[in-house]
Length: 347
Ligand code: BGC
Image (cartoon, rainbow, N blue to C red):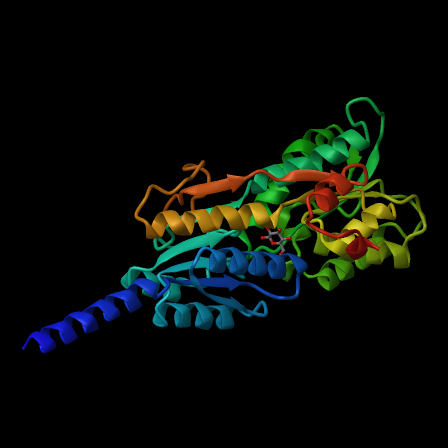
């Protein structure tokens, strides 16, 4: 009898040990491997969450909404307790989010807000509006719009209408530039200024390039120059740069960007792109790992904005990290000294 009790006790203890060791599963769903930033975000999240002791299911969705929907659904069915999602299209994951809610899985919207759902618990991102104001302010200062007579020629390339961030970037920049457009100091020869006219579906370089090609052919083939081209991010800035290199002979315009992608930093060093906005993926990933820990420990989750991000169902409590402006004068300090890139990567 004694032997039996000992055996049962030993069995119970080993079972307890196994369940104590079984790591919580965290799902990480990234939109695509096509753009440098999502590979970096995915890698950092994987690394930091693994170091924190979680089992991580990291998936990339080839910019295919159905694929992302399937991946997130599988994460839920495979026992993830927290899922971190950077959506391809903010409004397209409804059924997976409903399932998450039903199964008590906590969802964190990563970088891009998940729309039209009350199953989103938190949002971690960079201050998207501030990204746009930094781009607009750069153009304003570089052209000295408060003092110079102008008029200066401006064109605009914005982001993907399916990405909730894109309108914030656009609006942040336009709010800085609109007074100068109204005053006639900035002219937009193409006449394309509304977000829907300047948007770049999928954020793709090639899509931005095709639109820039057609603007150049239609409005600048007479040799007139462009002073600034506001681009919401680096993939679109690259498209605009390619188009200008192929079809434009005038003075090189100020081109803005965002992300500090390697090709764009190289272009900054070569004088082809004036600035980018640095969003240190390490900062965002660290914040999300902290959030995950707080959620799983049942602690209060750190947020610093409870008003801005309304997803049409709820206002999602958010943590906004601060983006930093980068150009040829500070890139070395920002990107090399901090170990974000090695000098070799920028050769
Ligand atoms: C991100 C940007 C990125 C863009 C294209 C946005 O949601 O915030 O950093 O450049 O998507 O991937």
